[in-house]
Length: 431
Ligand code: LLP
Image (cartoon, rainbow, N blue to C red; front, side, top):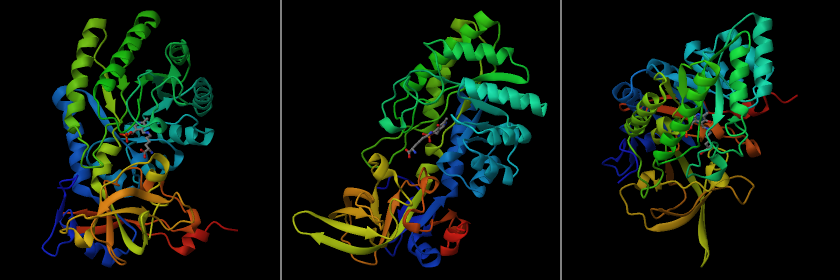
């Protein structure tokens, strides 16, 4: 009945997550509230890790921390033996604050600053993914000055057109990310990296987009990357060690969507990589994967209190909640659809079609339109499902609304992992 199997309805008719009553959570931690299920996160980490071991061999799953990043999440990821994809000095700092092993960090970004690169070199980040020539020369200079070796990968645009939302498509030629193959840019960068002092080229990286259900674009991207690997081997006499195939695996947001099991991706891609390596006479690379959404997304829900219920006859009913685009900007940005229900009436049929609005001074501050929920009144608790990815991490303080707390549940117990912001937090840096 629900999109996630960790959700159920208890005897009181309330929604439970990880065997914790969401209404108890609201009473204790207030709203809006992000709730993450630790067991789901750990299960997803394990299944991706196991899929490499089962179908391929050598590799490392690096959780994309942009999806949901805080100290406790970094601790859990480390505890599960995964690596971490970071894409800013702030994510690096968070990882460092819990002593995340530097060799398991992969540092992304199309415009890393000198300060960020220095921090990465200082901490000994295992793989800095170089996006462009300017970055390669900056990093070479910094590594020389600091007398360090920069371990790098090059971000390549495999030109694969994945069937996803335009705003989050990154694997095409017209993308701000990475080096193009067809113009010779990627090859020239590889040559330069190989020849540069203090640069150790570990391999190549690609990421073709996000929320992709079809596995074939990933298989195609892997083939393209291996063809490039063979070209570099044959023409530059240099064989890379790592192949990072990025993330992007789609998750179920609504009941009509079908999510593939986490193992399905490596099952298919291993086959392609093994065949292609044999055919091209190159060694099997160490594979890195960077799932983000598929690890954290299904683990989370958001709980809100319903304020006003405004019925506009023959038009629509606006149900306003105490959060909105500040804690989940994805409907406003991408028109992203979510499954919703009233957590305190979870056993009742969903008979009302409503528009769920946030509390910001902005007409576009909506969480969904034409959403089916139970008969609704002021004081009800609205649960939005599968909000574990790109919600907390994309939250803002628009209208000076404090960011919501994040509570982690596991086996019937709850604990705060990110405190709710206070009004004083909002003026802390004001001068
Ligand atoms: N690796 C790289 C280099 C990435 O850029 C991303 C996501 C990932 C891995 C993880 O992708 P995932 O497995 O989570 O799909 N804010 C958008 C999503 C942007 C994705 C950016 N890059 C959203 O809310 O849908």
